[in-house]
Image 1 (tube, each protein chain N blue to C red):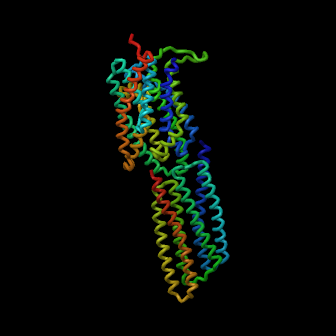
Image 2 (cartoon, rainbow over the protein chains, first blue to last red):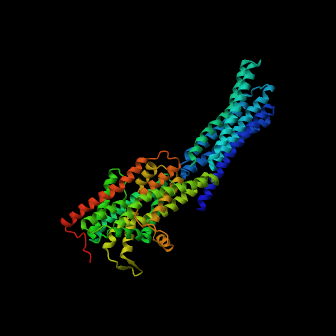
Image 3 (cartoon, helix red, strand yellow):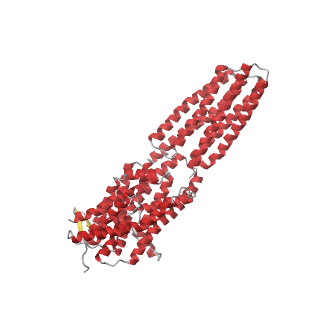
Length: 214
Length: 349
């Protein structure tokens, strides 16, 4: 019996660590964007590498959790939902990594007067990820409270959409060259995708939470 | 010859084990919360224990209805019950071994001209109705308590899983004990009056009465049936009642308590010693207790997907099963006595 519970706790700690990685990736994403816009290239690259490392270890953790859930036939009634949520959360971490990599490779020249809007957009994405992670933690312990977090993820995603639209309008109303406008607009979409991904996972989370409630 | 006569009872026991073990461990095994081998081991051990320790109470009540006093008669009563169960199962009708054996005994009473104790019959039939209702009430109550506790306890899904696994085995063991205690009367009850009350010694170590040996044999027959219950477990677990492991726990616990209430002599003695009304010790249907418990949970959840047709089928089986078994027993006794010249009844001294 003690062995059964110690194994369970070990698996719990792996899931917690995986979610910590998700949360940290969101926070680092926001800070990396701030560094990029502030012209702190070295700090930006450090944070980008941190996110890349987080993504790799999160992948390993997820695979370990999945393997254990299947091998030991744990939570048969909720296993599919848990695996789906964990895999989709991986997509959120991936999005953070991919966006930062694109920034590092393409180095778009962002006009200073747009910095605040880009930071606000990244911040809303980060908030959506934080609420999502808290929602997933709640799913494991108290399914009925999940809706509170899902609601907040939706809120931050809508806010991000508003900022994204405002930013695109500013870009395309400016005197910049069309190629640069398109380049900058493209990055608005990339940064905004973080909140979109978080919302997608939250929708799945909400359905899984309903299924879990007795 | 005695062993040959016992075969019909043992066959009935085997059928009962193969079918009713699925009520206890079906969901747990089908959802892989509990391994089949573990389920079989726990079920077999506790069914035998229940039969030997607490099997005599319900058997006495069957004896009140009709004391089948010749081995040939006992053989045919058990065979008629087994055939009724087999036939009704093939026809896809819900059937209970408990109700079939009552029909068999009534058939023997009619054939031999022995009077039927109407009081005992009413007592038995009323338990058939009470059994699923009581299981429904218990399951609904447990379900509400569990939902309340889990809603506030904030237990991690993995810890809940570990607890549920352990409790499914524990409650399964209790369910198997209750099944053995309550249902062994169906298997071996009709043979008890035909055997003497002599005792014999085993390896010079312990004295065992014929009744104890019969209960052990009946328990063993049920336990043997459990080994063959895998497919039924999968059907029950995945097909008829698709339950979550926690709901399955609630359902099996309610079922087990109901079976235990209708089998426990100690509880009867305890109630009687305090001047409280006692619960009749009667073999009841394990399957109908499970159906009642599932219905109870479904009602609490808002009666979505409640199959009312199933209730009608259960009620119709209360009449159909004993009637079919009685007719088969009557015809079988006639042939056994007149064609094979077997003694099916001994005159009362």
